[in-house]
Length: 377
Ligand code: NAD
Ligand code: IPM
Ligand code: MN
Image (cartoon, rainbow, N blue to C red; front, top):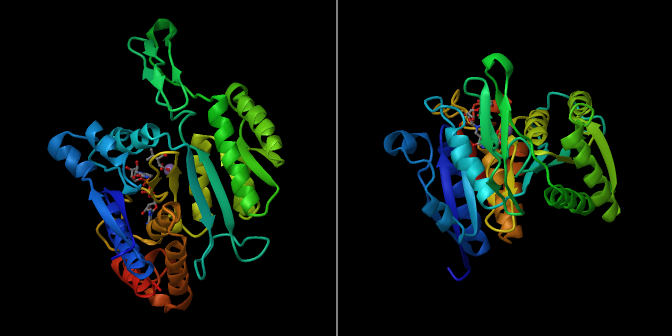
């Protein structure tokens, strides 16, 4: 092998994570062989089994190591045996925050013969890009439950762009128990993700972006978002549509191809991207990437799907398309296109029975992966 070698960190994770990452890895390796590069995997065992066995979630030394690698490929984390949040915050969100991966890119694209629940109005294809802010909002990790009706909690947070300091104290009368979770937005974080959305829209030949907002109910945080987004879009010579996220969901289920690039604060982006994934055919085809200026992470939108783990029903296409995004990111554009082309050819040409179970066929995770791998040119 004379071509370039890339070191890619790999966290298969839980449930269907290892199943879909297994297929993706073999396909990326095959694409490398055809297109003159190689991949060295740096494997990490983090996830539920490792945590239950050792008590370790994600050691700082591993995060440090990953920082010098070319990319990170992750399947999914989360397991019914572990309290929600421990692995999700402890692994996934820790990585997003540590590397300041400020854009969560989530294309909602339809592929040949992938059944869509609602027909797009403008034709048979769906091609929307969700650009989700990935470092702030209600995800910033500041909050507390009360004890005896009171909470006294720190705001101290270190992010790539700034550090935040302070404390908050709140008490409910009569010892009423409750909880606080703060949403945070800052000008530089809103600007950079809106700028990213504007550049992405321009590259698609579009002259506007749409912001998922909700300033009618939450005027401080989302009114601020709207003002900054308006200004940033204008700087890029782009139009900005502002749509309340509830109405956006309503419009989407009736007209799934209504928007081009949707920019969204973290939590709305999480929700809208699952909705768009469903409209584009299912979570099994929905790729994703967490992009920052340092290490970027590539992970499908879907979770560990414990309901189908171990059955062979997991559709590996989302992870394989995520792998194509990884190849594009490291600069292997031809190979990335080869992966997407072979996947498209598989969907277009294969017998109905060979399609993934998600689309009504009997194609197992392994069989679908194998069929796509064979077509890599
Ligand atoms: P999920 O995305 O795992 O599953 C939702 C539904 O979609 C399930 O019915 C599942 O079977 C189906 N599905 C998902 N991926 C599929 C695929 N590739 N092929 C076919 N069907 C697929 O969401 P959930 O059920 O809310 O979460 C399960 C666990 O995953 C939880 O622990 C959650 O916290 C975690 N989670 C992790 C991530 C991540 O690691 N990025 C993302 C979302 C959820
Ligand atoms: C996702 C997931 C995560 C999120 C969870 C598991 C923390 O739903 O990647 O979309 O909310 O970002
Ligand atoms: Mn999600």
